[in-house]
Every structure is written in C-alpha cells, then in structure tokens.
Length: 535
Image (tube, rainbow, N blue to C red):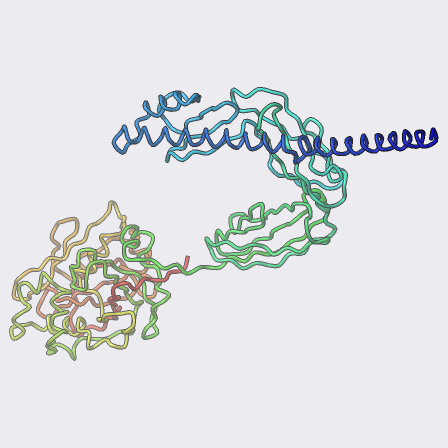
C-alpha cells in the first residue's frame, strides 16, 4: 500500500515537471509571437505608424481641398495654413511660396508647387549607393532634417558582406551586396545606402566608335573579370573633336577623330584606348527654321535634292506667299549650269501655267505688262523662256518639287539677298523696281537709291561677302568669283536686255539676249518637304 502511494507521488512529480516545461515552451512561443522580429507587438507598432502616417497625409490633402474650395478653384494659402494648424500639424516654411514643409508628430511631409504631397525623411545620407572592392572602406555621413533630433544608429543587413560603425563602411566579404541603414532612435526616420562589392579589373578592351556631329554613342567596353567591376575612367585627347562622359558616352563635336583612353578607377595601371571618328550628320530643317536663322541655313546644300545631277542650295523662303506657291515655300537654287544664249527665245511667248508663273515670279512687271503679250519686247520674251516651268522639267523631282525654272526672278533674288548680311562699308539693301519705258522691265536700287542703268552698274565691291563667295549664292559660279548667270526677268536698260548677275562682285545689270551666260535653276519645293543638310 505504501509502495503504491510512493509511486503515485513519483508520477505526480514527473507530471508536474512536464507541465512546467510545456508551460515554459508555450510562454516562449507566446513571447516571441508578441515581441519577436515579426511579432504581434512589432506589427501592431508598424500598423500604428502606418495609420499615423496615413492619417497625417489624409489631413493635409483634406486641408488642400478645403483651401481650394474657399479660394473658388484657386488654393487660398492662408486657409491652407490654418487648416493644417487645426489638424495639429505645423507648417515649418515661412511665407506663401511653395514647397512647404509640414511636420506631424514624427512625420515630415512636403507640399509641392502642384499641391501634391510627399513624405520626406528626417534623415539623409551623403550617398545612396557605393561600390567598394574587398577590404576597402568608405565613410558616409548622416544629416538630420531641421527640427529633428536624436541619436543615429547604424546597421548592416549582412555583416558578412560589409560592416558599419558610425558611418564607416568596411567591406569584409569577397562578393555580394548589402544595405546599410541609418536610423534616428525613437522615430521612424531612416535612410539607406546600398553597398556592392566590386572586382578589380585586370584587362580592358574597347571598340572603336563612329558618331555623327552633335550626336552621341556609347563605347562598348569588355573587362576581365566581367560582372560587377570597379568604375572606369574615360578621357578624350581632343575634346574639340569628341567629348566623353563618365559612363563612356561620346558626343561628336566636329568632324575628325579623337582617341579615348579608358582606365580602371582603382587599377589605374590597367588601360586601353579606342578611336572615335566624328562624321557629318544629316539634319532636316523646316521653312520656319530657315526663315528664323537665314545666316545659318542659306547656301547650305540640300542633300535630299539632286535632280538633273546638280547641287542645290537653300536660296529663299517665301514667308508672305509673294511668288504664289504658298506661305513658307522653300526655294532651292542649283549651282552654276552650262552657258546659254537667249537668242533663240526672243519670240517665245508662254501660255497657260507658264504665263501665270512668269507673272507670279515678276509681280511688279506683271501688274503693268502681264496681260499684253502682243506688245512685249525681246527682253520680255527671252525672260519668259527662263521663267517657264515646261522648259525646265529636267530639274523637277515630282515627289518633292512643284516645278523648276531657269533661274530666280530679280525680285526673288533681292528678297533672298536682303535676308542675309552683306558688308562693304555697311550692309547693302538691294531693290528691283519696275520702270515703264520703251523697254519695260526692272531697274535696280541700292539702299533705296535708284541706279543709273548701264552695263555692270551695280556692284557690292571687292570687300563684300558676295565677292568672297558668301554661300556661292549671290556671286560667282561653282563657288568661285567668276561667271555670269541669267535672272528670269526683263531689264529696263534696253529692249534687248535681260537681268543677270556678274559673279565677280555680285553685280546686278542687264545683258543683251545674244550674250552667252549661265543658268542656275530654281526649284520650288512642295509643302511639307524639308531640306536635309549636313552639319
């Protein structure tokens, strides 16, 4: 009997011990569930934090809505400040100018100029990302937002990659990355910096690059080892030809070639070079662009127009629709073409669209003489041949051009001339004025003064840009200082006179129809056709 009681007491004691152990285990589980890394208490704190942050954000947005309502669509900033204060928050920014800094308990927000709201941290780091080789270290600094106080703590997410002490980060691993976090004790303020372990390069190779002027291209670089390696440095030996950015992007500055040297930022003894070749680039320009900057564009070769195997240059933009092809029509002038006389055309009489084009190209003359072809002089008939599109179809690309004629009219010539600078003891202004005499046609003016009609009566002089071959547009042939070329207008010098340009000094004068001069066809581009130029 006593033995049974003794055994019963023994069993009871064992059961008690087991019960206590079970209770301890349950208590541990409960404590961990409450206060562990992902415990209930921590989650509750985070939820409360989120709730507090969300409520503050909601209150600020509500204040903005109220202020906009009070301001009848415009935010009343006095009302906005008052509403924020009523919600228990403080506007730290003085004055009305946005952005505003708003503090709510331990949260800081910014109201931007467009009245969007964003949270800003109370702490910032000097760097958000650093790359270090194994064994290297770097110190970053933490800065607190004005009004924020407290002790800053530092923590590495993976101490096998890098450690941190008072902002000094030391790489202890050989590969990988980690996040360094700086916190303000007692607040939710924190800032992070990513730390990556890089490898030192042992060799670098790079491909040569061809890039257009004013364009960019990236140098293709291969390193040993591959993957996450140290930063590289790039340097151009001729920045006037090509520049290079920190990431290896080159920009063409001028045609030519430059050598780019590439080195390891840490392993400076490891390097290579590549060649950057800068070529001309084609750029499309509109009539509006040409008209806005004639000094830049007039005389530039139209790379996309070569009909008749001639070189065409930008000559004139008709912003006012003076010549009947529509506002902002671009006209191209061809380089000097083979010489010709007008003797065969002194009886030429245009009809239909040819006659209409003659009138439109010479509006001052047409207002007086355009309707009476039977009374025309030889000068008018010969000029008509130059101005008839049906005679110049060789130079028409129908997909791009409305028509071509044998040369600009004198009115178009002076319009073009006056849109750019011509310096010879001042900036000359040319004029072409109709004169109704026995030889109806044009007389020239210089700075508003009428010229005396005689051969080679008008000259810009040998010191002018014209004489020096300015864009080869108003003087010379084939970019020289010699040559004569016809204009598609009758001269009032005499009944056999047709307007022409003497290339040497850009003289405007009249020549007898039997004289042999060159032609420089004019092309009218269709609406919407842009000019491609090389830059």
